[in-house]
Image 1 (cartoon, rainbow, N blue to C red):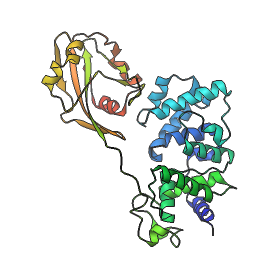
Image 2 (image 1 turned 120 degrees about the vertical axis):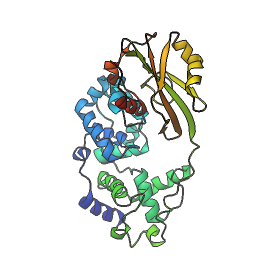
Image 3 (image 1 turned 30 degrees about the vertical axis):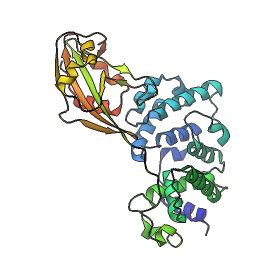
Image 4 (image 1 turned 120 degrees about the horizontal axis):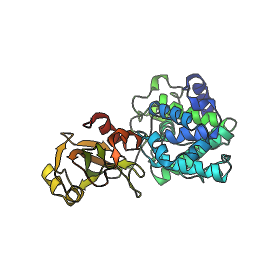
Length: 347
């Protein structure tokens, strides 16, 4: 029996019931695929339901302001996904009259959409035989065929795409793509794959040669950068604080944060008070205390943020215009959102 036939037969018996599986609407498929990049289904599901309720059409998403979209996205991380989603929604609504592109070649032109997402939408919504290759697919194919080419190398990306394309069932490409992704997520798992009940046991190279733990192969990661963040959490007598929007192309673009002092290492209270950033911000007398007794380590893909939150109480300060009562209205990084869940400002 062909690889695709075995896979699809498994899928029809084991597929997950997910809301985006019940539609061919490209807007909903697009939204689900963008959300599930670097996000587990269990986490992304609630965000998907929230988004589709708030923005039931592409026009609703296009009309929203970016700050609202980022607030809705808060907690999912990789915020460039949300910004690109919003940008493309406006492009489709305003330039394409709300009509989603119908071919892989046109879909991939949209900002924030790469080969994987374009292939998923084109195959699921428009029956175009374009194979998806994500982490699950890399794992299944590398193990089944015993391929040791690094999946994050230029050669590997091309090799696995070509292989996936050669295997796709052209009569039902959307089903095939969803089947191989589900098989990787549920059966051929990264750790403890269910080899004993696998329909491919008699032909899987990794199972035969005991290479399951070695495959897939990845090239070494980029060196992780350490950064040391000190947020100044201001509380004035009038119960006001300062939040500013992060600009530029770095992390958290478009999100809001407290005044930040960044150092080359962990900074102690005397150094904070003596810093130019602090003295410029607080010309009057203040009371300062460290909220978290041990630095919080927030891990991003290529950065680890060692973070301290300093509570600064002062009579008044310039630019402190945001009421603590309205603090939850602003989109903030999950690092700050977690702090706000724990911090109780004085009233």
